[in-house]
Length: 349
Ligand SMILES: Nc1ncnc2c1ncn2[C@@H]1O[C@H](COP(=O)(O)OP(=O)(O)OP(=O)(O)O)[C@@H](O)[C@H]1O
Image 1 (cartoon, helix red, strand yellow):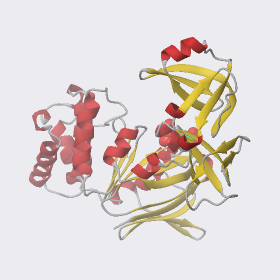
Image 2 (cartoon, protein in one colour):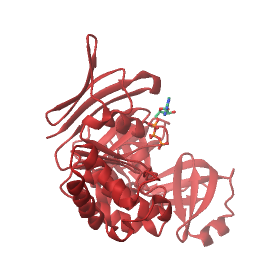
Image 3 (cartoon, protein in one colour):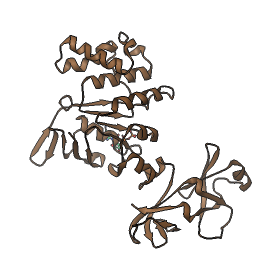
Image 4 (cartoon, protein in one colour):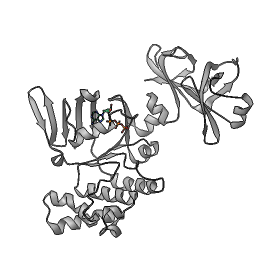
């Protein structure tokens, strides 16, 4: 039972091929406006692509080609979409909200209520059964919304930033709950949070500009990012370029000395990746090899944990507050970023 999808929607510059295995949870990450919600909307049947083809298990969700115009309506797809806001029916009790799906699918009242109780217990929300949605906190309402989604026994659960609207106290409990209910289930979760991706998902897919730019196990994508976006998530600097015999020449023209990973071939597209903590900041060029020294102009300084993060030339460096004061760092100042060759990973991308 897999999901196999390709879809294009020109008005949103969206063109994606996407596959999901049974009982697999995939985190979808990407910048604002990248097309993450569009992907979920297309799978759920709320958005109609211009062309494409999608199959969920035995069910063809849509096939839109020249001559073929097949498009299943949302409620027959076996998908359940959970939005950022819980969107419960305000005039129904919590129990009735959760029983609504099974009722609509044809269950009799007794069975629908039984199912609703089961899922309310699963999300530890039985005590709210008689309340109206307006009498719930954001975290409680989101738990009820999860119960409502699961009560329909969906083949595929679609979660659009389920933690985004919650305060920091409610998020950890919901994350634990999701971890439990997502085990052995097929789900796609949109998130901006690396922790959610690591804790909840087996795989990560990065979408940028309506295209998938990176895919792999969550750990692999974060440990060995190949896109600027994934590097940002992992808190690493990334310079794309061309692999050379001694490292990489970045697209911006920087000649980087490092040890290319085994199997990297000069001339191949690659990336140089290094941590901001591996970057030292000097007021003038530093000689002493094998080191990389790049003249850059500071764009911004910000606190980062107990360090100061210095942004310059599209890169960042973490230094101590004392060093920042000693160097008199300010935006607009010209400095040198210096990185040991051994601290830079170069690999094909
Ligand atoms: N209702 C709409 N009509 C037309 N274009 C839209 C509509 N909703 C979104 N778009 C456009 O489609 C593109 C993808 O948007 P989408 O909402 O899928 O991005 P996203 O990755 O979910 O972003 P975010 O992280 O901000 O939620 C964007 O360029 C956006 O402006």
